[in-house]
Length: 417
Image (cartoon, rainbow, N blue to C red; front, top):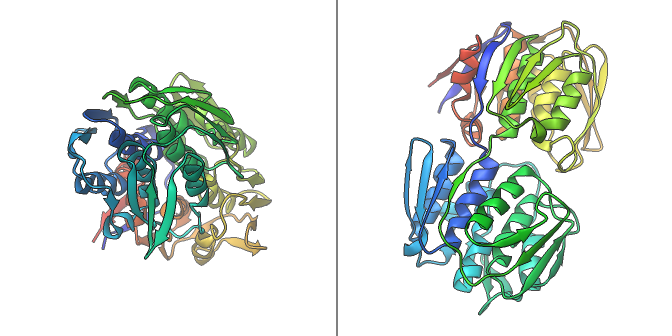
């Protein structure tokens, strides 16, 4: 099993180009189920999660080719409506095939998804939304089954904004009969990207990016060519790493409007931020100021950046409070940072007090989930000595060639067997 080895203490400098967003690509690929023809997706990152959903669609009967960051999916051959456990268990985003399958074929059977352990993340809002659209839902032996002759448009209210729930029900509603309204919908850029793609395919959607999304159902969709937006979390990860190493890094190929919460907090730490078009330059401060954060739905500070920011705060001047309000059980990385000499205490399960220290010390550590792995890389970059990170397959789910990108910025980092 691969590991990442880092010799810390090097200042990051140079330029890095951001890959396509995993969290945008996955729902886009799932949307190809809605189309009887070939959909093309460009700027698709080469990640384990992309491989997983490609295998899932191929098992359903779709023809897929993936070459040079372009994924083509031919939905004409889809004949199977069951997403089996062995293909779904590795990735929570597999639930995104549920809405498209029942919308197009009137029947879907999808295994309860697996994925990394950062909280329960129930799918109850997906299911209640499909029931509102007229589907009959049953659960048996670990599978969700949905049936409907044809979905019927309706008003759907989310108790809390849910990204995959909004995406799943938006894809279901585009082929429903009549109008649907999604209220208290999630507002993430990835949802806007999906709505734009569905519109290219012939869907009638308005309001994506706001709490109220309106959808007028159509009889069918047609193939389209869609470009995946840049990964705002990857961009934020490199920005935080630049600040943590007191470096000077230009993050290219990003959309600054998508990372406003990250930029604001980095400025508060003393980092200098320069924005020009689709790039952001981060110049770290010699003295890193402590900053409190609270994770919130977009456009607030993203939960997917909480672990990376915690790593930065371990060497800040002063104490900082981190409030994780989205997921329970998302401070597992704190125990690994403690192994590296960080001073962190957890209270009530979702509050962390981080007391900044002059430096961290290298240690063998273990990644527990995707973003935790990124936080340990940042910690390794700033620690004295050689850090060895195991279970980096978590990182491969969401970062394309991260060790190569950090190496290009001057980090002493490599992947080892």
